[in-house]
Amino acid sequence: MTYGILNQTIGIIGGGQLGKMMLLEAKKMGFYAVILDPTFHCPAHSLADEHIVASFDDEVAIRKLADRVDVITYEFEHIGVEVLKELEEEGHIIYPTPKSLAIIQNKYKQKELLKKKRIPVPDFIYVSSVEDMKEAGKLFGYPFILKSCRGGYDGKGNMVVNSPEELLFAFESLGGETEELMAEEFVPFTKEISVLACRGIDGETAVYPVGENIHQNNILIKTMVPAQISKTLTSRAMNLANRVMKVFEGVGMFCVEMFVTEDKKLLVNEVAPRPHNSGHYSIEGCVTSQFEQHIRAITGIPLGDTSLIQPTVMRNILGEELGAGEPEICGVKEALSIPGVFLHIYGKEKTSPRRKMGHITAVAKTLEEAIQKVDTAAEFIKIYPVNYK
Image (tube, rainbow, N blue to C red; front, top):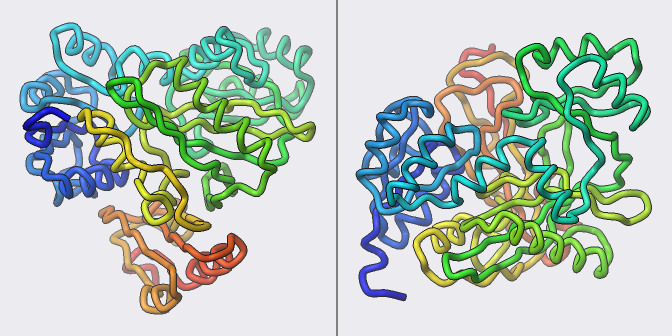
């Protein structure tokens, strides 16, 4: 570690909950931090030393951020990569690298590179017409998945195509005339798992325990750690995540999402170049959280211990299906009366149906006990718009 390493100024593009949790760790270590986000009262605003209020595609503002900081990172991947490439060429430090971001933010290019590097992925093809979709139907059978190559999260930008009669509707629904699309085989998986992995500036790597993920309506609801899979499969998943890290040569946290198939094969679904929702369990569950690890990595501090302290379950808190508005949080006393339960509220100005507003974590001696605790707490914690009645 070099003298003065904590005197660096960190710039974060994005002031949402991931940026907020990065900042919590950065401020613990004494870093000065500047964020760029278009929302003045975004979750990370109160923790930032400076806040540049500007849109994510405002190149002038991004350059202003670059001039104020020693290293730039980001909390989501759907940002303009060209200006970041230019800044890197001019000598600015950006982690994960714009090169990694450019590939990962395009799902087709991401899968192409993974396949080229012999990383197992579902079969896929590029789609530019309904004829291409017909070809996908022949190759993969029905159903298959149609995806937007760019953007999309929590199931947005994806459609299941169940029959030839749905081809035109799916193509038009995802903007096929103007947007890049890809078709992917439908994988009859038995479990969805994810592995966090991190690389430091010096090439040091650290891999976290395997998490098992439960989704509802394409939104992550629960992550359970350790995943309820065999030791052999756990080892294979962690090794596969390490191989993916080598493919992208990135610095910082990455999350590798995988399918476990019926015949116990692992297929990489997506890679995220940042801390990830499924890694929130690490705040209470691991010696070093994913957010602390990310800050360590991008600033040149040695990586921390990724060991799981005890079984841990994370559950997302979503806005209730009662419209949008200023959030009212109910059931806090009841939830936090359960030993081993922790509450994280992100501080978003408005709630809306199924919007991620916070999460609950439960730790216990056994996974079953942690699951029971987090599910009980989730029955109490509800987030409504203030005037829902």
